[in-house]
Length: 286
Image 1: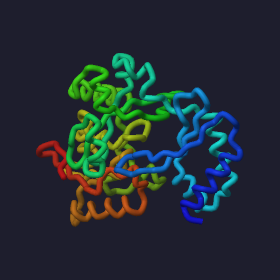
Image 2: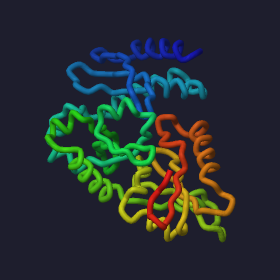
Image 3: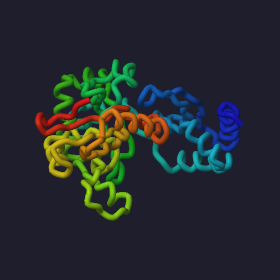
């Protein structure tokens, strides 16, 4: 069964078991890195916001051997027990003073998101773009995010500079940096060589931009030495590797590219480029 055949059968079964009064539709949804996915939209009568389930994800589950009926039950359970995400038209989002304390920044790839960047405020950094998002919180954790668009700046009557300054402040305070020793993370004994570190935030989500936090690169310098490499392993984290004899930025760039192609969800790829830090100027370089 290919994707189209799976899609047709899955939608038929959903229509058979879904309660009356629920509208079932599909929609093409733009994701990070220019990826378009097909969303299964379930909306109760008089509800303004729909629950979204990505059919490609469920097709992958089916390919791994999960029965169709189990996947249908999973969607039904989530639809009944998980509230849909907030609508950007919700009243709370119209008031910047109410929204601003939960607006943070994240990094995405510049080239892969050129179309998206036409409609969102952003700042180019290396081969990346800093963009801004609202964190929807539930039970102390981030449940979902809403990307800030240019229309929101007009709605809030603020400049991009004001948005960026506020987002940086909130990100630094609410998502503090976390250095994770990779050997310890993998359950390995510590050796004599300088360790590698995972650099992320306390939620370990959308934390690749933590290397931009004030003082973080100096902290990394104390752990790794005056020169080290920054490998953007996903939108969620970077890996810091101390400079060693025989190690080159070109070789590490090849490694990052290979890992992105074979191990990272395409929606979470940040960059195929390894970066290099040197203490002489205190900056990360392409």
